[in-house]
Image (cartoon, rainbow, N blue to C red):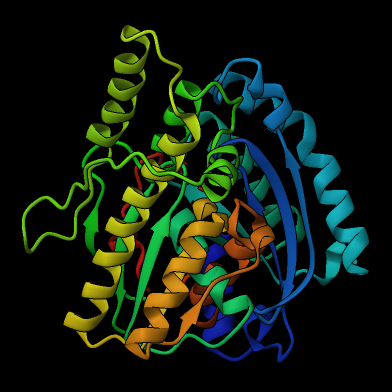
Length: 358
C-alpha cells in the first residue's frame, strides 16, 4: 500500500493524523514571485505567515521574469520554512499535514514549492494536500470571518479576474472570467504608460484618489447577460489618449487618466459582481486577490453591498497578496474530508478551480 493510501486508511478509521482534535497545517506558496510558508491551526488560526517578496528583484525588468523567480524561490525556501516554524512556536514533528500551491501559476515557481512540500511530507510521514491558488485567495476570507453560502467571490489579481459562485463550502462555479488582460495586468500596463515603476497598481490607485478631474474612458460591458471581462481595449484607450495629447503638443493628464481608468475598471467589475449576487440569490460577497487591496475598489464595493443589503468580507491587505496562510485555509477543505494528494503530485500551471472542488 502507498504511504498516502495508508494515511487515508488511518484517517478513515479514526487513527493517525485525521483523528486529532487540534491540527496544524504547514502551507507553502510559490506560484509567482512570493515565497511564503505559513502554519495554521485548525484551518483558521494563523500562527505564522512568512512572506519573502521578489518585487525589488523584478522591478528592474518591469515585470516578473519566470526563471529568476524560480531561482529566488530555491534560495529562500529553507529560510522561510525555518522562520515560519520558529515564529509559530512549534516543532516540525507537530505538523499534521503539508499543503502546497499546485497551480495555477508559473511552472518553474510552482515546481520549487511542490518539490519542497513533497519532501517535507515524506520526511514527516504526514499527508500532502495539493491546493488551488484561487481557492486560496477565496478562502483567505475564512481566516477573518464565517463564509455564508451561497456566496459570490469577486477574484481580482495579477493574473485572474473571475466571478465565482460558491453554492456550498468548497464547491466552485466560475460564472465569468477575463477574456484577455486580468485587472492586475491592465493596471501594470497602464502604470507603465503613466511612467510608474513595477508593480504599478498601487501608484495608479493613489494617483486616481488624488485626481480632481476624470478623463472619461469606455466601459467594456460585453454582452448584456455576460459576466465575462475584457480590459485590453481600456488599456488601449489610455494609450490613445496619451498619444493624442502628445501629437497636439500638450502634456497628458496622467492623474485624470488614472482616475478614468480606475473608475472604468471598478464600475464594470463591481457592477457585474453585484448583478451576479442578485441573480444567484447569494447571501454574501467575498472580495479576493491582490487587487482587493485597491482602495478605490474596496470603498466602491462596500457602498454597493450596503445599498444591496449584502454582507461583504474583504481580507486585510496582508492576506490579499499571495501568501501561504490562504493556501492553508483552502487546504483545510481537503483535510477535513481526508482528500489527500499522492506523492507523485505534479505542478499544474493551468489547474481548473471547478475540478479542484471538494
